Amino acid sequence: MPRQLRIQYPGAMYHVMSRGNRRQDIFLDDVDRQDFLKTLRRGWCLGSREFKKQQLEALEGQVGQHHFGELRLETAQAKAERIITEELGRLGWQQAELASRRKHDPAKLEIAAHMRRETTLSVKQIATRLRLGTAKSASVRLLTATRQKSCSDPAQRSLGI
Image (cartoon, rainbow, N blue to C red; front, side, top):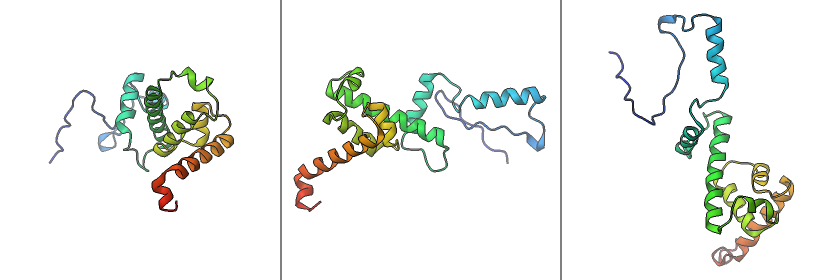
């Protein structure tokens, strides 16, 4: 029994495969094959930037171990950008203020801690994006700020944490 036809609708995600039925050739010639490979090398998303952004948002939280590195990194970066946008809005800051504020600004360190908890980005990537200085100094500042915050939390103090 043949498989059911795929239901198609706008915004759906489809898995692209390139193989022939009964081992038939799928390319007309070597030039055709090279054109196909060139298209794949451009990246996993063939749509507009807005389409790619929507797809990354849809994948947020669904990327597993079987997904390859570039997709995992792009998904983490998209989530980090969403977190930065939300935090800047909450603080009433503009993007330019990230560069003008001090490296050890408590609000910047709070954003960095939020990104570290919620994404798989490295401290180096977070430090670069938030203008926190070098990865090493950002790591020390982040650790210090996290410890100070946990010491000031009465619930954690009563538990001896």
